[in-house]
Image (cartoon, rainbow, N blue to C red; front, side, top):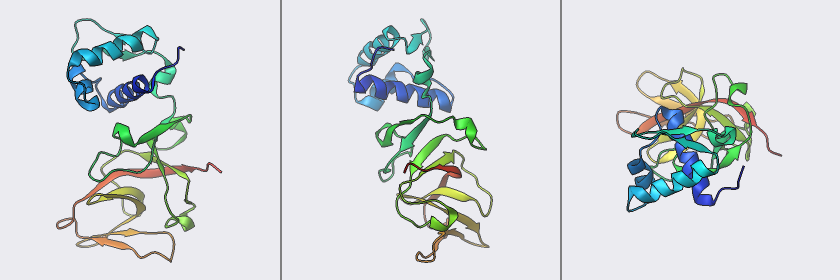
Length: 200
């Protein structure tokens, strides 16, 4: 495959992400995501991606983009680094790169990898620098390890559902649990932990 520019790769990952969520993006959505003044600028990038064999443009369709090359589908999983406050976890600026691993190795299927910072989940076998595989979901059973957003912070902890609050428990006695009243504190589950990749 002909090498892509950094911007083409970013747009291709954005397209793959949106298709993974259900629908290809429109030209206007691509333009908005990348700060282009005109949808035409986005179209020029799509034409270049088509010329390089990554996508097919389907004429006459508002969302007429089809991924062609296997690597364009994001062979592997997006690796999410530090998440900016208040931004979606899979926002394009958070994706460091794609890691070549089959999402189907995990049950349920992994949607992304999250770079682990710190040793708060050490006793669950999740170490600093590991890549935690995460299945995207807004729901989780009591006792599951989850990726949770508390206000603007994203953390990996074990979820305990109590009578009137939630507790996020570390797997390291050096750290204290986090107790949350979801009626008073903004809280959301971003996914459930489904496995780990050790890089060193």
